[in-house]
Length: 370
Image (cartoon, rainbow, N blue to C red; front, side, top):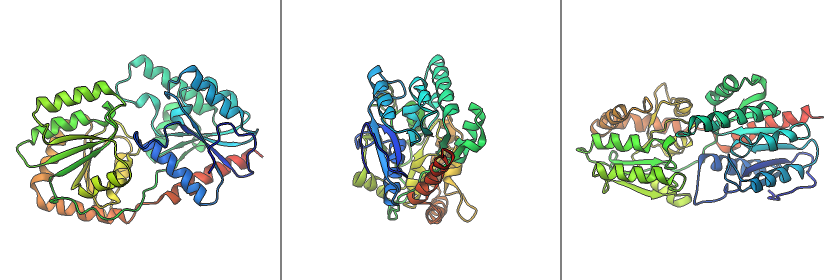
């Protein structure tokens, strides 16, 4: 797998993949970065040449020099090259991407529609939405990370359904998590941003403060420092500082250890196209409590007709607190959900399936371009 910034030749079946410059940054993990990294590795392992073009920048609203670097990287690819662009890089800069759409076979991978990020001013969200629409309509193909997200992109941006594909993330195999005492160790793995709903979880935890539990918030703290400051104040106001820990980002063995110690994984998001944390937990047989938002119910799935977790309405700390209370005080519920999570574990698809599906989409573009 090569990592050149400006390629002049491309092998006949090579795939160029344009990713944010921090895709390999272990200090700032994200679901999108994990998807990009695992996809490139799986394609390469399957014998598909991959040219990874990492473009630094404050995407989706980059500086002029970052836009110029992206334009230079795309201009360096020969006519007819098949290029998969991470939507975080591509969707905010139609002025850079669209002019290359006639010369290159462009596929855009949308992890999250730009306007869906929580907390954006209305005018900013509207501008990003319009930019994204221009890019997606110009692309030869659009890839979403879940069937729900595919339907949403088709409907919202008026795209031809035949050009939009669902390629869900895979899941790395993992050992069963032993947990702690089977009930009280809660884990929330997510960047600390408004969209991930940590504030809702703190309010819910305050409502069950009379019960035994402790909760770890694992994820980057630098994406929205103002939000993190407000979150710390909220934790302090509810006097939960000794029970809610903000541990920063974890990856590799440290993240695996956090999952191994967890009895329940909680994802209180306000928006998710897929929710990779859900399958990461299920891969270890850990039940999930999540908001029933967007693509999460599809991701949680079923095993033997039963859901391996609890779903609650989004933006409802009362419902989240009620679900936590049920989990903490009902041993039979916990036992049933653990059994179902372990059954669901056996149905999860790996990254080889993801790379196979993506290769099929990109090979289709190559055939169309001949």
